[in-house]
Length: 86
Image (tube, rainbow, N blue to C red):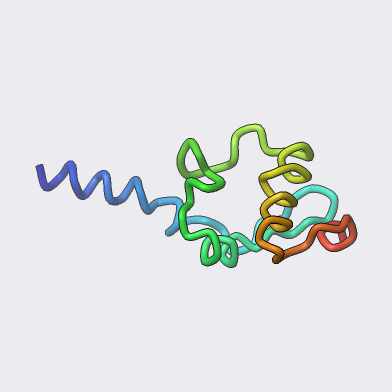
């Protein structure tokens, strides 16, 4: 039973422990993963299916609710094109 609990703990926190601090994305966008972890708190807010790359992530998600929408809702973070695409 102890082994199962330890294994579940490791799986749950693997993304937090091994996530990159800054991720270089397309078109000059740099995503500060560490800063977003501190603000969001819950990894499942972005990573619904668990640690790793966000499935289906692209322009539609970034410009929709996933990035720009969250920034607008929180009134914090870039929402204009040149604020992300430098």
